Image 1 (tube, one colour):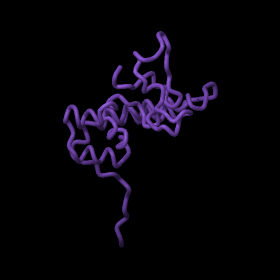
Image 2: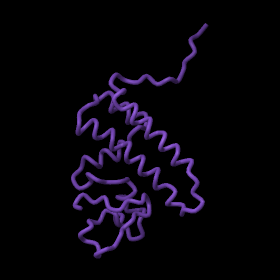
Image 3: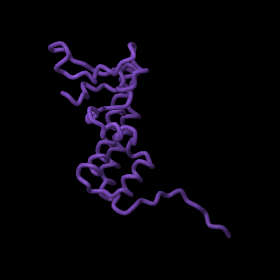
Image 4: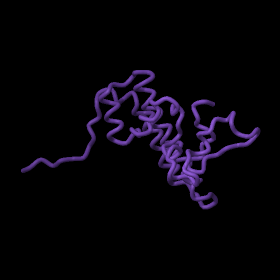
Length: 146
């Protein structure tokens, strides 16, 4: 009789360091997806999802690059399985993008005038007292020069 293959993931050694936090963030993501959004604009209903996605990717990034508490195998596993966004992490490694909130804020095709999002403008260059909020993700400023 042939073996039955199961789709159980084989976690690499050292994944235990991340597992508890990633499970908590996964539960927060499920709650955000199930949240009632009838009173919000369509774009506003996605803001909590973008924030949790950023938080999860940032956690994996800091554990690998800043704290060096996980191995390359665990890091690659997290990228491959979707625990972190590889493209967003690649932007964080570049100068000027250290605090980037999401990739939609740097895509010029998503804006009216073909420029970056308003949250990418440093706070010092904006009018006094003006509160800026990104229409894509709800960010209030992710320019590295703030």
